[in-house]
Image (cartoon, rainbow, N blue to C red; front, side, top):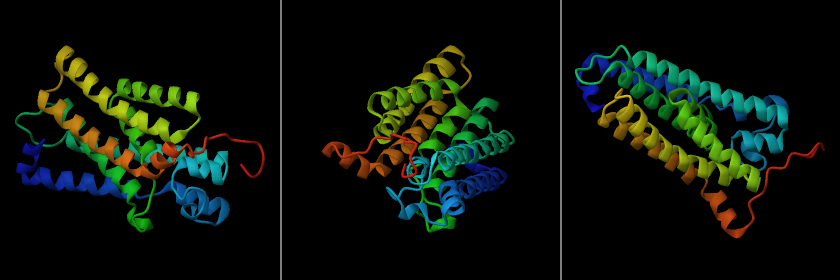
Length: 237
């Protein structure tokens, strides 16, 4: 991937993708939706996290659903742009599939960082779980299905979103390497070993960041104080 930066025309396109993806990620749907529904800042409500779980708890199911869809779509748009732009780059080694993949992962990562550190909202955003899920859904449906299965199974057992997100993040790293290496590289021969290593490292960085953002949740989990997500019909829910 580093070889792509040796061509000046490539550098401009890569920079444009990174900036656009970051700015898209910085559109914090949780903050905007909560402002529209309540006139308040979601970061001053509930857990203080600008994410769909806190919105669902503090504002309501509809607001939470809109937040989830918005966060998901902004990453999808960023990833699609990244893949399209990177497919036009000059490369002497990477094939078309690899170029597109590099673009998708880089754009997804920048969108993810924008979500966590939004420039429009004083760099205080969410934890990036939905954005991370959107990235995997667009790039590799098998990786997404494995990761989301880990999330759903854990949530059905515990009813706790944080531990489900953490385990889903861990599974994302494992499944990305296994699927990319054994299926895309070994079986199909569609990508190089360099690609497998690069995307695995990028996924590891994204997942590790998500887990670090859950440090307060981890403390509460260890103390047995983490709240379960139980949506009631009452107004207080």
